[in-house]
Structures are given as structure tokens and as C-alpha cells.
Image (cartoon, rainbow, N blue to C red; front, side, top):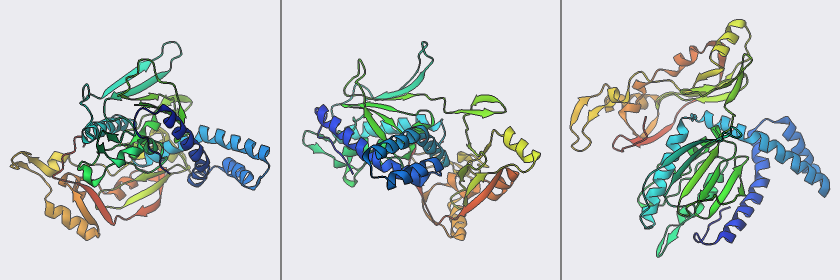
Length: 395
């Protein structure tokens, strides 16, 4: 179900819309949580809810289920996000990408020029209570603003719905717009849940907090807020804290993914190699337990590179096309590899060729008994940005 505003001047309409979305998602989130988690306590409550017709009893069970979801669903979301390869460092790039798309969409809608095209991050510490927050501000197209004078772009109606979707990707664009977004509210935006439980969004006349990963709640307009600005506030959580050998530590994994006993994760290979679903093991001996503890119950999140992007693809003058320095990988080498693997490749640059990565089975073997492979996934079709496309966010 989608909701759309007619502009930025109808606060009452937006209040009604947020209420409607909240009621809708409050019901569907029960089924989502049940489908996506193995939570016996919730499953038992859900069965009681399904069998109960008495109003008071049913209301009590709903309240209990909502409490469980508010406590646990964001953590489930975090594990899913990490499984896609995101970490805390990705948040900055994702929010910058969202802002860049908003600036581009502002031009498409032919809005007046913004005061500037900056993307401003602010870290704040409240000395009174020790709470911390991270915020980002920009003057790109405000949420759900889809028309300006005679210009209308229907795809811009659904920003609020996009950030509330509990899974999947939402990147509004149309063929006639001519410019596809870099990352407007795709899955990457959900990376903010790695550092916050309840992001707060102020954009145009939309002011809401997101709880349980997808439930909106209207909040007050901040003092001094500029109506044409988008302000995303992330109250930082201590959710990154983990207990290791009796110590409470803040663990930020870069190039790694958590692998506690029983915890599942995704480890990808290259465009021409298999990927796997792994699970942290219950140590059967002291040696394995020591390895897990020393790694803070972490494992690899990919095969890992054996050469840099420039070493693989070489260096070319983007304006003239002149080759300054040839690379170690040729187009023929890359195409031969993926063809022998039976993979259909669309796009892809030499800097992502299978030749530049380690072989995943060897990398997994080095993890010893700390993880076990549950499933092996064979690639059939790989779609990537082409070598002729400039990506300012490529690492």
C-alpha cells in the first residue's frame, strides 16, 4: 500500500498518512517477524493471538507481541544487514548517496536552487546524560515532494514508504527522468540500524521517528528547523557492545562479519565463483574455542582481493581514453573465466574480475572449524556497473 502527499503545505494530511501507515505496518510486522526469526516465545504468543477471539485477551497478547518486537526486531534487522556485507563504516557513504540523489532529484523537479549542495554530518554528545547522536543535513528534494508548478514526477511520491520498508530496496526513478539514483533509500539506507534503534527524520513537513525498524511515530518539529532541509538524526545505541571474556566491548568489524555459535551469515565470492551461507559453530575442542575467542567470534565476509583495482584494470585518461598504464587483467581473461563458469555477465569492470580475488574455498578452509558451510550458491547471472561508468563511491 502506498501513500502520497500533494505538496509540503498540508501537515494534517501527513499526520493522517503516518497514522495509516503505522496501523497498517503494526499488523503486518507480526507476520514478518514470525517469518524471519526463530523466536519460540513470539511464536507461542502469535498462536495464542490467532486462536483468541475475546477482545480483552487479544489486546493483551497484541501488547506482549509488540513489546517483544520493539526489543528484538531491530537486532534481527542488524543481522540481516550485516549478512549483506554492510558495516558501520558504510553508513556515511549510504547517507551521502541519499543526499546526492536528493540534490539530483531537486534539479529534475525544477525546484529553486538550494542554499548550497553540502552534506553536513554532526556528532553530538550530551554531557548531562552521556547520550550521543549522529546527524546528517542537506538541502536536496524533501521527502514525498513530487510536483513543483507544472513539473510532476510520480516516482517521487513514496519516500516515506521507502524508508519504512522493513526489507528490500526502494530507489525512485522513472525512465523519463533520465538519471537513475545512486542509492536513494535502497537497502543501504537500512545500514543506519547498525548504530541506532530509532532514526528520526525531519524533511519538509514530515517529522517522524521509526521504531521496530518500520513503524512511524509523529514527533515534534525541532526548534530552528529549516523547512526546506532534510535532517536525519540517529540517536546512537550501545548495540555494538558485545561481551567477550567478561569484558563489555564496542566491536566494529571492517572486512569481517560476526559468527557467534549458531549465527548465520553470507560470504560472497567473485563474479565467477560460488558464494556460501555459513554458520558459527559450537566449539568441540579447546583449539576451536580459542580461535573463535581470539577472533571475537568473527569470520570473513568475502574472498578478499589479491591485487588493487588499478593494478587489475590499469590506468586510463578518462577524457581521451588513452591507456596510461595497462592492467594485469584483460577483457578476454575475464570473459573466458565467467564463460567457463557458466555465468552470464552484464557490465562489470576488470577491477572486479575473478582474477583479482582469492579463491573462496581456500579462504573458508583457513577458518578451520570456527564456521561450517550450510549452503553453496552458484551464480547464474551477474549484473554490475560497466567499466565506462564512473562511480565516485567505489572503494
